[in-house]
Length: 406
Figure 1: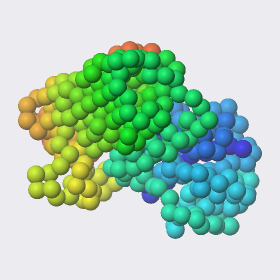
Figure 2: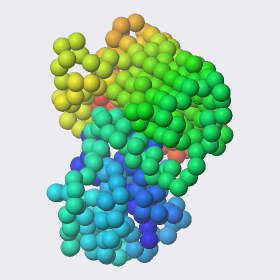
Figure 3: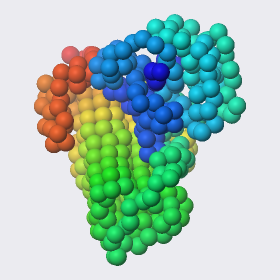
Figure 4: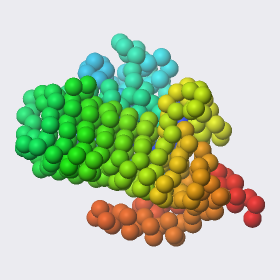
């Protein structure tokens, strides 16, 4: 049976700019992406995405091209647990599972019925979930739910398995029963404290001298916690990242660097991003009031309802040394920020500049940087990646208001 993870059209726009470059289900919360959670819990060997047409070449509906047969369709914004998984697995063809008006999952007799399901949003035989579900419908929900999802994913990934040993006499460990270390991990003279939540170290990860890791925490495959890093809890550092300084309740989706001192808190950072040395994010207003955040769906700042909210940065964004991000700053795809002072709280995709003003980071120049950065990880900025960037550049032209003046 096909497992298809779909973008809910009522949710995806509210997760921009993070979903400009990926389906909703490819967002990481906890150790795994939402799609990976569904795949592991349902035991499906194959998985596809139902997403925007310009993303389908990178995230195909079906990797083997077989678009026939029964399909299980699940919502990419819903994080599954054991109870929800049992309900979804029990669905018969024609049945759908709902949380109120939200379609959580549906079982289809044939994959050809997907278009009709997503258009109508209802199945002939609806069923209601037994408990409310976890829905990631706003960017800040990712870091708000991250600690709980690390715990859930940790249990899922480590059940019945034995951790590798710490293997370093100079490393201090608290609550070792809540620490899981995959093969090829290297730890030197660090502190691992899992008293308040589990710590998961992915294959090939490195924890360098003087780093302090406090759970719940996930350090992804081949990622590095640099010397003296202070990871305060509820953090996910995705695969192939390098982090230093102080990080609290934040997610780096993968392939991004915050290698130096500086504070990152209550934030989500996409892939292929780089935060310059001593970059700092404000995550709390001086008056302790709720943080307003730019919404691409509403085309205005909206009240997040959160007292703590830092930086929301999309893929391929970069910032120079000593950058200061104000509370609730949203940075679009491919933005390049530098200079003194606080940049604006909404920085559109393909912006180049800072507090003194912005100009457009044109696609050819952006492509040169992306090609260099991705090649360092052995990946290509190929025609598929170029097509995605071109579409986002076109879709975000209205956000770059300075272009209207020319």
